[in-house]
Image (cartoon, rainbow, N blue to C red; front, side, top):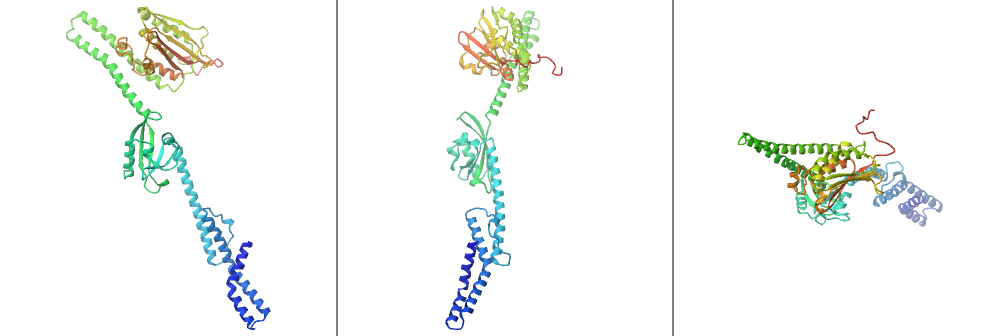
Amino acid sequence: MWQNARQIVCVAIGLASPSFSALVVLFLLGFLAPIPGLVALGSILALTALIVAPFAIAMSALQKAFGALEADALVPIGTLLRVPPGPNPAGTLWRSLTRQTRIWRDRVAAAEAQVAGVESAITALPDPVILIDRHRRIVRANAAWAGFIGAVAEPRDLASALRNPALLAAADAVLAGEHVRTVEFAVSVPVARLLEARLARIDGPSLDGAAAVITLHDITVLKRADQMRADFVANAGHELKTPLSTLLGFIETLRGPARDDAAARERFLGIMHEQAGRMARLVDDLLSLSRIELNEHVAPTARVALGPILDSIAATLELRAAERGMRIELSLPDDLPDVQGERDELAQVFQNLLDNAVKYARRDSTVTVTAGAGDRALPAMVWVAVADHGEGIPNEHLPRLTERFYRIDNARSRELGGTGLGLAIVKHVLNRHRGRLEIASTLGQGSTFTIWLRAAPAESPLRPQGGSALE
C-alpha cells in the first residue's frame, strides 16, 4: 500500500513539474503572491495524483503479474491489487491479462493432467515400452524396460541397448515412413527369450520429440507351447502309426497268402492283439493326461490313505514281477499319515512308478517301496519312495524324464510296451496335488523315485473320497 502511495506521489510530481516551473517563474516575476502560489501548487499536485492514481495502481499490479509470469508461476487473482473500475486503458489491459492468465492456468493444468495420465499408463504397462526420436535415440522408457536397457538418463541410440539387426532394421523402416512393423528376435541375457517387437510411427506432437513407439512382448512361452503341441501331435501320430501299420500288414497277409495257414494265423493274431493293446494303452494314457491337465488348477481335498493303495497295486503287479524273478517289498509305517488328494489319480501315479520299476529293473531283483512323514523342513508332507535295482539313469536324462514321449532307449521302451507318457502323467498329477517328484539314480545300482504329497489336516478331517458334498 505504502509502495503504491510513493509511486503515485513520484509520478504526480513528475507530471506536475512543468506546472511547478511555471508557478515559480510567475512568483519570481511578481505576478503571483506566495500564498496563492502554494495553494495552486498543492491543487495541481493533488489533481495530478488523483488522475494518475488508477494508472499507477494498475501498472503496479501489471508489474507483479508480469513478474509472476516471468517466473513461470500461475498468478492468484486475489493476491494482486484490484484495479478501480473505470474506462482507463491500464485497467482494461489488466482485466484482459487476468482473463488470459486464468485461461492459461486452466490449459496448463489440463495439459499437465493429460501428460501425467499418459505417464502413469506407460509406467503401469506390464510390457516394455520405449519411445525413440527421428535419430533412433531412446528418449523415454517405462519401468518394464529396465530389465533390457536399464534407466534412460539421457537419449542414446537404440543399438546401444539392443544390438539386434532385425529390430534395428525395423526401427529404421518405421522412422523412414513405414507406419507399423512387427519383428521377432531372440535375446540371450539375462536368460534366453524370444521376443516380439511392434514398432509404430508417431505422427504429430509427442513427448520429448518421440517419432516412434516400440513395445515388446515375451512370446517364449507361446512358442514353446506351440512347439510342444507340434511335438505332441507328431509323437502321438508316430506312436499310433507303428502298431497301425503292423495291424494293416498282418490283416492283408491274413486275407491273402496266409488265408488258409492256421499256424500263421494264430501267430499273426497274437501279434495283432499285442499291437492293439499297445494302441489302447496309448489312447488311455492320452485321455488320462488330457483329463488331468483339464483339472490341474483345482487341488483335490479328499482324505486318502496310501497304505491300501500301495498294497493293492503291489498285489496287482506281483504276478508280472514273479515272471521276471522279482519281488515287491512294502515297508510302510503303521502310523503313516493320510494325504490330501484324489485316490484314483494317486493310484495311477504309484501304478506307473511300480510298473516302470518292474519293467526296467534287473531280473531276480527287489523293488522296495518305503514311506514316511515329512522331516523338520517339510512337516506337513508325506513321502513315498519306489527304489529299484536296475542299470540306473545317466544324469543328463533326469531333467527330461517327465516330458511326454521322452525315452532313454526307444527300442527297449517300445519292446516292453511303454507309451512314453507314464512319468508325464505322474508329473501332472503331482502338479494338481501341489506335490513334487524327486529322482535319484546311480549307474549300475538303480534309481529311486520319491513322491512328496501334502498331509491331510489332522484338526479338520476331510470327508472320505466318494462321499457326497451334499450329505
